[in-house]
Length: 434
Image (cartoon, rainbow, N blue to C red; front, side, top):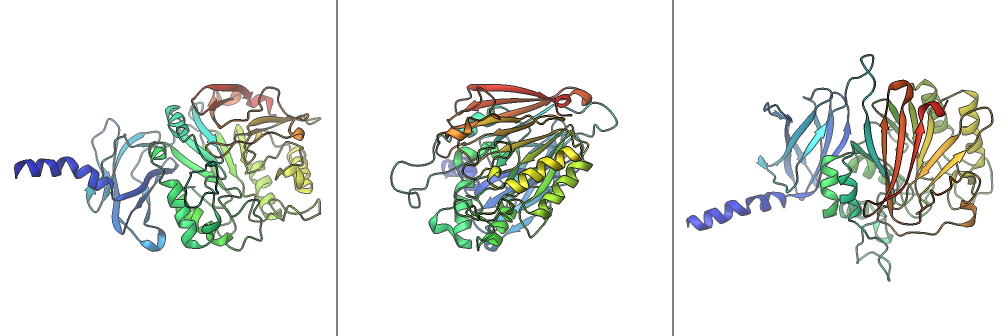
């Protein structure tokens, strides 16, 4: 009898872990609160216990009941935190601690303003994440692969990750609410992804495949269901237009990130009108106003498709030349410093640099894909904006480090392959973008 009891004790962590479907995942981190996302396999109560590393005082969140109607997801706010600290945390389901074979830690942002130079920090950026599922994948060679990239990214020890769209791929059976929940669950539940989710803060935008079908636009009939899914499964700190897409903004240290929606208002690609909507005027007006009022060292515009490249291929913004020209004109006329772009979609990676007479150049870093299929560059990609030596046609991700004093910050870009080999590096100084 005693041996049976000991065996049950040894197996207990496995039973408890089995209650978690995916997560925990860290959402946004601010100075006074942090979002933690957890999904259970069935209805349950979930709470988080946490303590500052080096301090034994335990903080406990109020329990949240997960329900089928919201895919058994708990979005938990840790609000008994101090600025600029690191915390160890635990997940409790039905008042029992869940065991994991990796540590769980989160952090809060530091109050540096008016006190000292901003802290150095790093983040990783990637797009196009496809997790294979035999029942719904197309026949032939699997499109996804190389999920060891998650461990390679985690090993870089970034402060946060920025997902640049096509973070999952909806497939033909998925275009109901039930189907969309299944696809989100299937991708989020990838076992190799879990340590990265649990210990790195995550922010996201979407592109076509995690909004709807390939090349989706404003006509997609399930766009509001897609938005519901995004709100359920991601932990961004805000949505500028709560019922009109995923546009948002966040700040880390002295850098601001403007999260754009290139689907909600986008006109069909086949519409023959150079002034057709891309972001739409409402979103465009918000962006240029927000950029003008920003005092960030770098103002990073994150978008699903390429912006700077003039190549009118696939879904590059160059195909929507009216809005692209308007954006560049507004940046110059309003004398907005520090702007650069992070983009994806293309299943190639490169850095584009647009020289602008009378003002600073615009950079656009494209990183794609992480685990989805690779693609070949096309002839028009080799144009005057392509920075020599940066076009890569293999699975990759980038690590971006921001360092230096406030008046002379440097943004260091490193592109890595799946194994963690360095493919190229580039340093951009804040003084160059003025």
